[in-house]
Length: 333
Image (cartoon, rainbow, N blue to C red; front, side, top):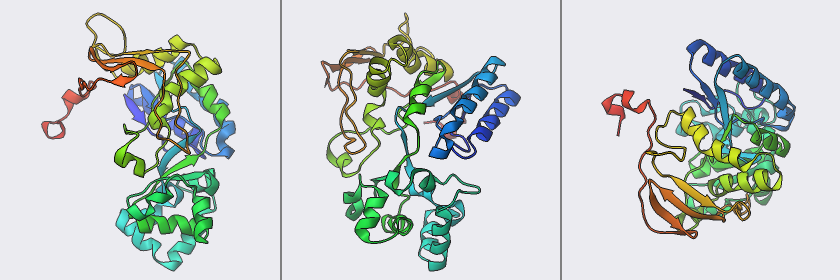
């Protein structure tokens, strides 16, 4: 399967979809878009054209699918707010350039205009729509959860200069949440029968060291939000279809055997939840919050959650797709 975090999710979205479809057509491989969105307000009207392209390809016999997360904001770093040339050569070279006044002036100027050969998320979200979520430098961690605009005002600098300063001070790309998508488009996407759902987030806990950084609420609430908002409250899709698109659809797409369905001789991964009570609680302001309404969970036939409490059991195992056995021994393990 050809899986693509496409070349563009914004200004050149339609061209990127065309490219993915062409690769699928010429290679004969099914293709999946990670994670479909129309990024930036100026690109929100591209929804119909984007979906039409995908559905036309599907009708022509290509197996084109996509996945999404159920929020209007994505997460990456401040690297997505700056032109690629200033980052050429890696993090150390990027930081060294950002210390040069002439370079900073040029970067600030390019941050204020559409990127010619890069996706300018700074322009797409605006400094007010950028939440700083993850720092390496302990002294900067108190800034997590604040917008770039707020931190710039606090420091008395422009938002562009503040972004550059933070990369230098943190010695990292600085994890950042960008509000880029239309709630309306997110809701319409959720109803598409070939759309799967992924958290696109690490597994973390609402305790200890994890609380020193912010995160995207999808890490805690993506799947519960699907059932609570788009199934129960807005009725964008049925509960049965939501379950299918969280289980058998991705397992089938990725060629993962013996999982994704309740069948004899399949591995017993089972989630028992209350459709009337399931609810996400993580927000962008307070993302470290577990969802509720999931009562029991079996992993490989072993109970790991009983009445919403973890049993301590750890029966999980690595899940490998059909390509794993084809890798060289040096790349396995």
